[in-house]
Length: 402
Ligand code: ADP
Ligand code: MG
Image (cartoon, rainbow, N blue to C red):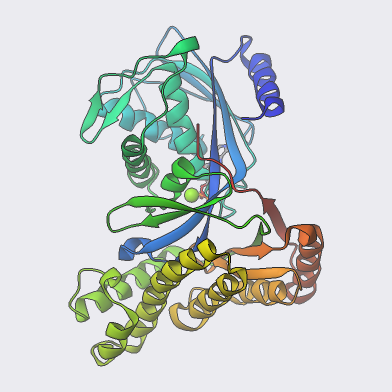
């Protein structure tokens, strides 16, 4: 965490709780760069950890009480570690409660604490504020009450090094933590989400793309060219029935894989798909075409980034959006307008919808010198064509949570 953010968070914690914090943590939001709806098809994804961040400050208490404060909400969540229940009066705290409960169920020996959370990640803005909150809470608590996650529980807690600092999580433990966070969001909060968001928040690297293979959950990195800035544009639209649309697409992908005789669309390449087309309904084919195409684009995209061929990489983003629009049918008029507007700006390298679709946000790669002009152009065009205000964020690509 940079010095000014640390000082500000520390003084806010001090003002709220009357003592200094003993643990400080940051956890970044994330955005999908390429690889749309590939996760549950065991495919490939490129994502970025961005500098929209959750920051947390905490200090232990002698009892088993937790006071959890977020600067985004007026009410304090106050509960005992021995009675962790969802509370409809403070629903946002269910995320923190879920991870605390699961950590304890695995055997982590936690004690009470006071915690202040301050976040620059827009809630529901497509940057995964919920994942950053979960990851950040888990790492903050680890600093107060060290635990070591193993595949089936917890092992001997790590020893503090010089100045009381804990060793960071290794890759295997990060992956286990990602699973625990996912379980918290799935079971305690009741949102069915993939692993991706937690993986990126934990495994992100400054100025690098995180490449995730959802088949074996391996993670790799490749540099993002320096002369590319990331701008997220939020449509402000969330279409009704998103969950239903998502489930329907997922079922279509699964049915397509079954009809093609494979476990998941990951095992289908573009040639196989054409060869097996007659076995699929039109909608199954459209969905499979998108997913198979996305996997192929991620593979080719990684290669293009390594070679520094930005123009061709941007072209893959264009194809990705077109595939969403025409084949997977998870775009919407507002997202199409945003992507069209982006491409009409001379500094645009690439633009596409990002995340689930049916509303939400677009991802744009832009020449850095033109970022502010690009954002103005987008806001103006969006207001003119959709009569809606546009929220947009210029993002740096940053390290994962620590
Ligand atoms: P996103 O795409 O941003 O993850 P979600 O709907 O999954 O959107 O998660 C948003 C929810 O996460 C919020 O409604 C809230 O419950 C929780 N959350 C996110 N950021 C904060 C915050 N700063 N303070 C408290 N709760 C937060
Ligand atoms: Mg979320």
